[in-house]
Amino acid sequence: MKKTLPIIIVSFLFSFCNDRKKIHPDSNNNTSKPTIIVVSKNIPTITKYLCDASFSNVLKITTGSTLQIQFHFKGSNSLSQYKIDVHNNFDCHSHGRISASNPWNVLNIVDVSGKDVSVTETLIIPSNASVGNYHLMIKLIDELGNEAEPLDFNIIVLNSNDPIAPTVNLSYPTSDSIGIARGTNLNFVGVISDNLSLSGGKYEVSYKDSLNTIFDIHQVFFPPAQGNTYNLNFNYIIPTFSVKGASLFYIKAFDEVNNVTVKQLNVTIY
Image 1 (cartoon, rainbow, N blue to C red):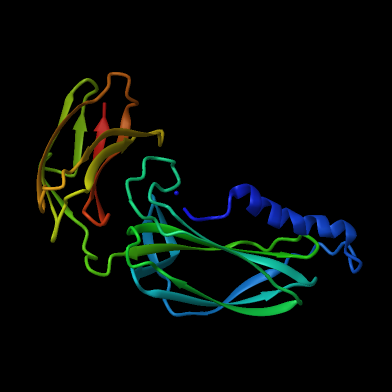
Image 2: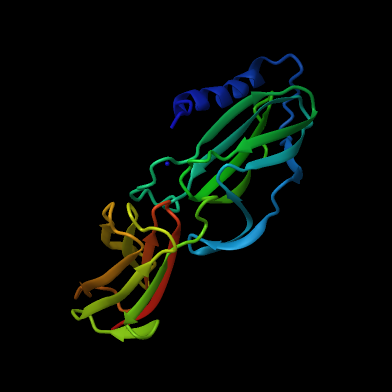
């Protein structure tokens, strides 16, 4: 979730600064954390509902575009390194299956010096990057091994040629809120459509029970010649051991460039 430094090297680089704490001649055992301040950025942050939660740190940007952020790093001790880390969050860090062919990744570790440093980072989103949700994390460490509170953003990457997600229209169930008994068949009937093409995309069905346990129950990959419509007809028998109470069923549809839409159903299991 890649052309990056192996994780063992990254750990070494940041732990190296911790070793300096023992030998640095100016060490006064100052444990004050350095700080990271965003001075400016060319993309405004917005509030968006992602991964079952609302975030106010979301940046929305298209492939082929540039994200530029100016940082101000400050510390009581001399600074040592900062790290810029961009990685995909397609599965909301649930370690599920990722079908995107070309995730965007960045891992930059840069040496700095002094107690007051201004830095401008320019990140170019590749024109062929897979669209979806990403995390941008900024970390900072001083020469005594003190780490700043990490700064992070959620990034939504959209395809510059196709920023429109597919749609899911259900003819059954006829309501977004239903009740159903355990052991009973739940039928999903409808049409998934896209403005351009579903070919090479997929749809998934999952649900979260009243105890917040998530179950992945169905996944279908669209063939290369699928076109822009798919007739959905899927049956699922509610297990007799299912937890009773309010559950959420999700139908996720991905188009050719990985744009995704989520259809949600409120299902009370009794």
